[in-house]
Image 1 (cartoon, rainbow, N blue to C red):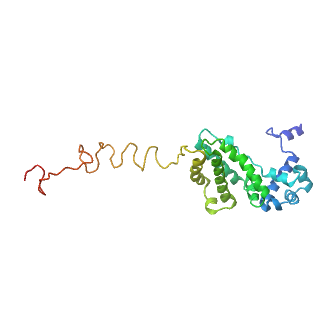
Image 2: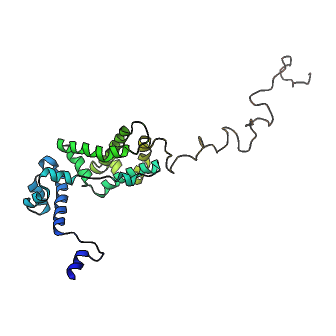
Image 3: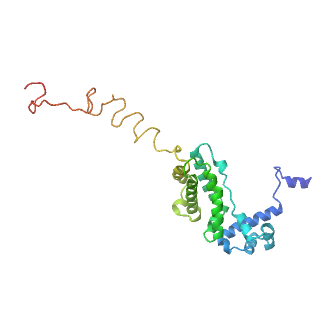
Length: 260
């Protein structure tokens, strides 16, 4: 009876087994070591020491360093879950998910793969294949515009660029900026790529239908409620666009029609 409660736990979920804990510990240690020294310099022995296990345990769970690396840097973007009927909202979801995942874990599989790809051709090739499969192909499937794959690739490059400078290189202006401010300014750029023609978010600069700050329905240079064709200094009812014609025979300084 006691053993059954231990297996199911108070909430009914089976607790992590010893083998699963060891495997997870090795995986986390591998990510830290790969991120610290790169793929080429990381060794199974060093990873085992980082995980406080022996070398045989690493081999038992993962086989080779290459297999361990592939599993340690594998990541999945839930594109289908982030895609909505509203293209503008979809763009915001993509961008927020990308940047939030990096913020939550600087040693995430995505970040580790990007770091190691700078010094290892094997890691770079894995990054190319993984980004193409996980983001470009799946985002392009939801882009209703010409050059869908190129648009998806460009948006991915921009996302990686922002994430790299904000979380890896720690460029001051990006690293210290509030995430909501980054999203507010970056989202319209992404909409032009993968959701062209979609309506902007609520932070648009003017009311719908208004131009240059004029009130809806008003014409430039007229006051609200004025009759059409009237403006400053013009009498109601006068012919717009014409000036009073002078009598060719009238002397200067005399009023028209007085005869004097």
